[in-house]
Each structure stands twice: as structure tokens, then as C-alpha cells.
Amino acid sequence: MGFVTFQRKRIGETLLPRESPASADCPRHVVIVMDGLKSFTTAPLEWALENLISTGCTVTLIGVMPWLNIPLSSKISSGVWPVEWATLANLQERNEWRSDVKYLKLQAVIDLCKKYGVVPQKDMVMGYPSRLLVVEKITSLHATWVVFDRHQRKNREFYAKRIPCNMVMMNQNGEGDMFRGRSCISDSEGNTPGESPASFVPTPEVLISKELREILRDRVLYSML
Image (tube, rainbow, N blue to C red):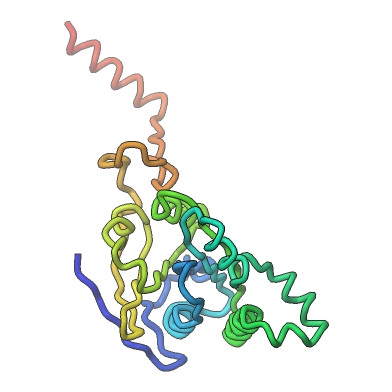
């Protein structure tokens, strides 16, 4: 499965085809998956805002991390991921928040989203296997696009087989490589043993009329004579 690489584009240009009138009123939900143990950066968000996200969309930042030992737990607790938006809003009433790097980074996220007219959300995924938990989180959010930071590249094939929407993987040059996920109508064949079915779209129910059921029944009975 090959990549389609998109270079950073000017504001106002888009990578997306025009939507049909039927989908024009459907809000987009773009999920950005980041390594929660790495230094937080707004680069994936900026790329998504310039290339994928339109006014009125929702964007959710997800920090991914394993179960942590005590030293790493203290590192994460001092970072941006555990901080609630309400905490930042309360601190803004006092000037000391400006001396804390994590609050400045979160404020940068809010400012960027406000500039583009989108709604920001933030969440964490912690545990093992982390990539399966990421799939379940993305599915539960009903994402229409997913942007992975460059630290997720080793899991590209895994995500492509399990996530039913278009995805973008950031590369070392700050560009986005687009790849398509699995078909939305695929069934659960090929599931890895032990994996949760939450990441798969249910098989549609087939409705058969009473008259058709009677015809099929009669044909079955006739074939048995």
C-alpha cells in the first residue's frame, strides 16, 4: 500500500475533494494521534488545520503511552496531557500560568483552533497493547480523518487494516503521507485472535419481506422432494 505525499500548503488550499450536498452538513471529526512520551508539539495540528480541517469541525488530540513506572509518571504528570481545559481557563485569571511551558503549549493549541474556527478536544490512551487501544479510541470517536505523528510510522500497516477512514502519517520533513484504511463494509474475517471487535463496523442487517420468505421457503421444500 503506497503513500501519497502532500507538502505543506498555503492557507485556503485544500487536499480534500468537494463534498456532495448530502454530506455538506456532516461535521468532520479529525483525530490527531501523538506519542505522549515525546515532547509535545503543535506541528501535526498545524498541518491538519491547513490541509484537512474546515470551520466547524472538531479536532481531538490523543496522547498515546504505555503503563508508566514512577519516574515516567512524574514526567507525564508535568506535561500537557493530564491538564484539563478548565484548569487552564482557571489559571488564566492569574498571570503565573505564563511561566509554565505546558500551559503555554495548550494555549497555543487553543489559539490555533480559534483562528481556524474549530473545536479542540484532548484525551489520553494508556495501556497495552497501545496500538489496539488507539484503534478502539478512534472508532469510538467516529473519526472522519486521522493524522498520526511521525512516531507512529511503525504501526502504519496495523492501522491501515483496522481503521475505516482516510489517514495521514507525518514524515520527517513535516509533510503528510496519506493512506487509506480498510473498507467500511469489510467483515470481521482476518481478525487477530484476542483483539476486540470494537474497531470493526457491524455487518448490516438484511431485511426480507414476508412474501419473499414464503417464496424461498417453497423453493427449499420443492428441492427436497
